[in-house]
Every structure is written in structure tokens, then in C-alpha cells.
Image 1 (cartoon, rainbow, N blue to C red):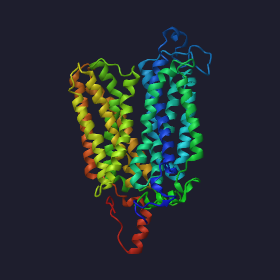
Image 2: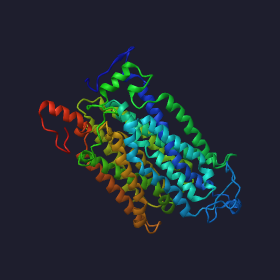
Image 3: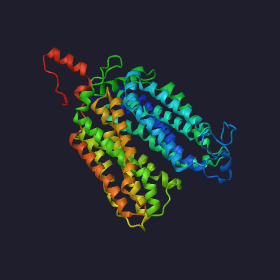
Image 4: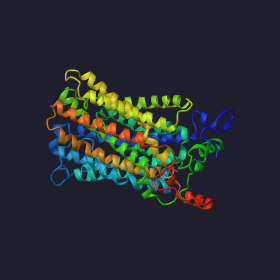
Length: 498
């Protein structure tokens, strides 16, 4: 097999020097897939404000104890209905998505490996688009039916990250993995920014707040058309890829042996959970998500109570951290390519240096945030933006390390770590509630930031010490057995890198 640096000459350009290859098209489509997935998550937080802000219509349209609107007439477009929702109602509507989302993480990765990422993303986004369109109508029957719809949407979207990882494992050459992964996953920030920046205008349009859901669902159906026509689970299956690009990808995407879905061995669960590189990846993913979602969910309260800055009602301030993360993630891609040209800098060094940037610099800014004077709101906003924005470096760190360790089981590994990490995301606000009993107490908030900083420090430290970028021996257990039988050599011991 040729090395990852092999380049195939084609028409005066090397296959990996083309500005836009078929592999880039797959990642651009995944970019918009992630953009819509996150926009559909954020849309509810904005719609909740819009659907409850007209007190003159609340009496005739509020939901009663039975869950059905007191106005029994069903309005398909639901454009003039407003609801009197309690804080408990809002919490149930928002949290129901994440309960479904956690459930399908591991099954989503498994099915993406067995049946192809194209199929999983097509059905997952298709179901989510339908539910997005039906959300305003379901709310007319009460909070519970609406929450059930959001739960099903979570089930459908649970496969998105694992399936994207499974796709990247097949399509990304080793030296482009960080860049292509960033291109895919930065769509999350793009979708969030677009939704926060435009949803207020959409809600004020003649169609009213339900159009937030209708336009989002329509965009999902348009994406499905492009995805069906121009995507494939593997480069070998794509009808438009050139022989040169296909050879470049297959020769350089992994040091191990990629298995077809039919020949893929059963998932080596015992080897995975006894692997220190994987366990360090699991821990750093959990600690990252704890800090990330703690910031995004709790900072608006902190800024309002301590600095009297209402971030939620300011589209620019709301989207600023996400915009910074989107832009900085591509800056880090450029920096990574510069470092790759330096001789002697390994892939392991590249992963760990960017992971350290994405964790330890935010760690320092979090500590500093806890000591900003209460009369210096601009500095607090700057530190918040820096903390979230610099975390974009992790796209080149742990977030693609699943593929480094096991290209064949990358979807399953992402399902495992992302599922556990989202549990930590749910735990974060509960811990904040235990620490912060007085929203106006600077000391209590400082304790929260120090805790998150400690999580960032510990997670990255374990990744730096135990993280690896070599393909693990359990990635191709059948091949290992066949090879060792031919050579008369003992099998690799559990948990060791071959």
C-alpha cells in the first residue's frame, strides 16, 4: 500500500490538490446536514418566546389541563395561536429532544456501519424534517404530544454524528481528516448562527412563528434531494468519482484495512472498553461537552444577573460565540496545514496540540471570567466569546480521533462517546443548580467556572497522556487472527496497540 503522502497525477493536478473533489462534496452536504440538525434544536428556544408573547390572544388559545387547546378548531398553519406555557411546560418541551437523542447514539453508529451512512442520514434527516413541519400542529393538541414529537426527532437525529463519523472514515485521507471533519461539523455552528440571527425576523413575518418550523422543514426536504443524488456511503460506490481520486482516498485513508459492511467482524466490545486510548477519548469528550453546554445554557443567566446584559434577547450577542467558533475552526484548519508541512511533526502531536488549545485556553478564560468586575460587561462578553470560539480547535483534536483509532468502528465509537457526553450535558445544569442557589452571587458562579475549568484540564491531560492516533489492533480482529495464524505468532494482547 502506498503511504498517506502518495499523490496520483491527473490532468496536471494531483488528486489531493483539487480545489473541489467528490470527497469535499460529501463533506459540504454533511455541513448542511449538521447545520439543519442544530437549527432544528435551537428553533424551539426562539419559538417559545414568539408563541407566548401575545397576551391579548392567550385566553382563547391557551392549552387546558387536558392538553387540548381550549379553542377546539384545528388550524393547520397555526399562525395566529399563542400559548400560556408554564416554565415546567417549556422545560419538558425542550428536554424531550435530548432523551430521544441519547437513545439512538450507539445503534445509529452500528447501523451506519452495517447499512451505510447515506441511508442513515437520509432517513434520520427525513424523519426530523417531517416532525419539524408537524410541530406547530402537534402543539394544538397539548404540550405532551408536542414533547412526544420532539422525542421522536431526537431519536431520528441521534444517528447524525455517528453516521457522519462512519462516512468520514470511508472518505477522508489520513492527512485531510481534521480538515474534512471540521468542514462537516462546523455546520453545527453555522446552523445555530443562522437560526438565531433570522428566527426573530421570520417570527415577525405574516406567516408568524410557525414559519420557523415550516421553513426549516422545507430546507430539510431540499437537502434530501441533493443528498440522494450526490452522496454515497463509500467512495467505491459513488458514480461520479474519478479513478484518480478514488485511488488517492483508498490508498491513504487508513493505515489499517477497511472492511466492507458484509465482512465486518462483530463489534469488539471488550477490547474497546479495555483500550486506554478509547477510554481517554471517552473522558475528554464528556468533559468537553460538560463545559461547552454549561456555558451555552447557563451563561445567559449569569450575564443577566451579574452584568445586567440580556444575551437571549440580542441576536448579535446570542450568535457571537457560535460565529467566533465557526470562523476560528477554519483558522485552525489553516494552521494545521502549516504545521503538517513541518518535518518531524507527527499526527499525534497535531491532534494533541490542537486539543490542548481547544481545552486549556478556554480553561484559563473560564477562570478569568469568574474574576471579572461586575461593572465590566464588555470584558465578560469577550472572555465568553473567546472560551467558546477557541474550543473550535477540538475539531482537529479528539473529535476525529475515533477514526484514527478504528476506521471500521468509528461510527460506534462516536455513538458511545457522544451518548455519554450528552448525558454529561444534561448533568451540567443540575450541578449548577446545586452550586448556585443565588443567581446574583459572584462567588457561587466563580465556583461553577472553576469546576468547568477543572474538567477541561483533566480531560485534556488524560488525552495527552493516553491518547493515540495509531489504528488499534482490534479494528480488524479477523485479519489479525488470519495473519497471526499464517505467521504462527500470538494474538495481540487485549488493550495494547499492535
